[in-house]
Length: 278
Image 1 (cartoon, rainbow, N blue to C red):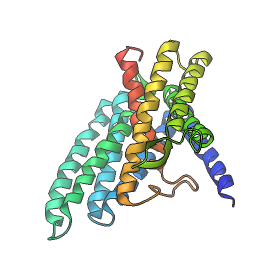
Image 2 (cartoon, one colour):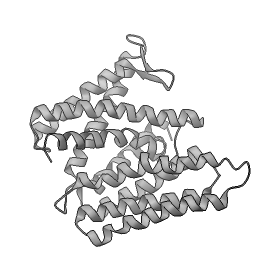
Image 3 (tube, rainbow, N blue to C red):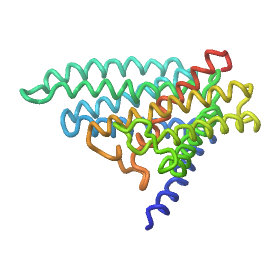
Image 4 (spheres, one colour):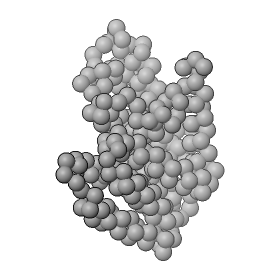
């Protein structure tokens, strides 16, 4: 199968799964984002730790999913189940104890630091994504969908402007040491398309925020989304790999799909909180 055709087909399937998880009901959202948490943590640990401390990796992945479910229960309003978070902290404590007994001379103990880095970098933002989709215990994925529309518009704009202008007309690179293909033309193009997406979201009524806030939020999300993309690229470059995984043929791993979102979605939500819009 042609690589472009494969990428297009699986891109559409990925979009369909995301829309299903955000628009139908909370059960699908919970299943989808718990799965995303699991896979992203697995990709991160495989990339940074390889085959060492595999039991600790598995325990940390379980902990990340528990944190997501505990946060979900809290925002749903089920505070009894939200106490699952205490189980997560127990696992964190046991991870530290476990590393003592698993330690062997020359076992590269410092790599266990990636366990906690993954939980902070991936587990925490995904757990707090529950705050975006629940209002007083009621589920609505529209705001999360709006956030993803801005992120996707930024990605498409950066790619198109980078291909059209960033090759010969304006070849200046954004951060060549980390991502040689990213250009300033792509960066500006992504900024323009993300702002356009913010304007469309306001015009169509998908979000009810004033236009000026939609535009400012979209611009900030683009900026931090680019940092998220570059931050993941830095991890991959340090690990000597091209893609974080291969779960989506033609697109790579889930970290490759959600790297921008890990930075951009918290930015968008914090912006709305600061201006008392949510």
